[in-house]
Image (cartoon, rainbow, N blue to C red; front, top):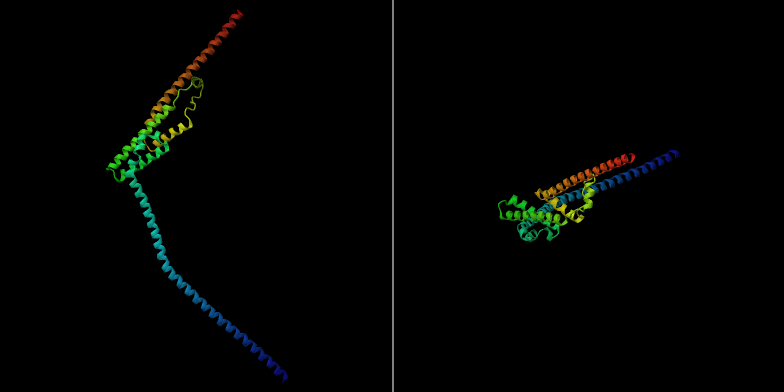
Length: 253
């Protein structure tokens, strides 16, 4: 009987501990469920706030983008408007500089002024083709180009010097007809700048005809002079050779 009582007490104690463990698990599950519910409530609250914030922010963001775009458009329009207004007063502002010619100012500055006149002419040609402004700008632009061509010829005349005889003889007796450097770096830079502007803008290139003609004549002259000197040298060599043969014949006699 004592063994049965002991075994019974052991089993009852084990059942009691198991019931405590089960109760502990139940309490943990309840606490976990409560925490899960609390977290769910928090997430739902945050999600609701985000939706309300999105509903509020997106229209503000779109409005800000639209205002930025409108501001850029206004700034671009103001820049274009100021440029167009400047076209109407351009002739008055640059007339003295154009009539003075490029020699009275920096060449690059003069070319930039001509470019402004060309832009104004292009604008009036499209948007105001029968206006007085177009006529004035076109006349002043053509006058500036004429003075630019005149400056090109003046630079050529001032810096064109006779080639020394010794150099001409060297060129005449050489197979290479490449002329020596005739202009300084500064002068060549000015000529190139004027030529580049007139050619790139599709303007007349007649101003280069005189220079081309003179260069062609000089090249032809050098070619003829070279052939002439070559004939003289060959004749001299032949005469000298004949003389040597005659001297030898007389010596043998």
